[in-house]
Each structure stands twice: as structure tokens, then as C-alpha cells.
Image 1: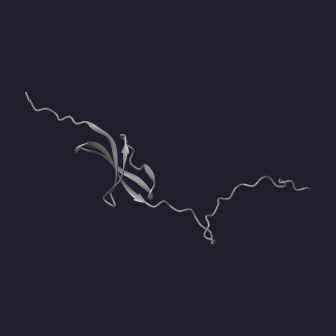
Image 2: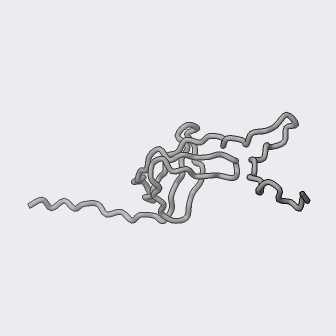
Image 3: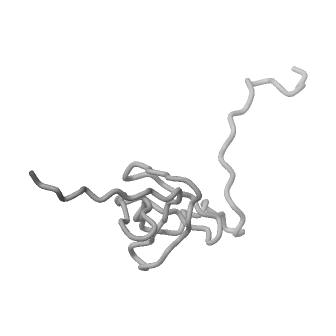
Length: 102
């Protein structure tokens, strides 16, 4: 009978978000988070989006979950000639509404 034991490790309660393109840590999350591939993490500082490309288990000390992401700047809203953001058109009321006498 084989007397070798299977190693047992304790999973730390943190998740590392790692930017594959920049080869650097983006953030640590308190808690184990396993987002599906393709999920988007919206970061505010810096203002970037991070798309999950893979989920891995880092079997180091401590053992933790790692979300490998690619970051990109979010698409800016369209701007008009004045440089101000363009507002979306809002539907208008029925013809004759607005108190016009007729």
C-alpha cells in the first residue's frame, strides 16, 4: 500500500487581480472571488476596465485565487464640436403637448 500522503493546503481568503499585459498586480480583494472568463471589472483608480482572461489557483504561501486580466481604458462618451459630451436624444411628448393653444 502507498503510504504517501496527499498534501493539504489552506486557501487564503484573498483574491489577486493580475494584469497579464503589464505583468503587475492590479489589486487584492479580501475574500475568494472566482469570476467567469469574460467578466469585466470596472476600476476607478486608475480609470480602466479589466477583462478576466483566466482564473488560477496560486499554490504558493499563502494559497490564493488569481484572476488574470487585460486592462484597457473605457470608451469615452462621444463629444460634440464644443468638446462637451453629447447627450442622448430623449423622446418628446405628443404633438401639441406643452400648453400650446390651438
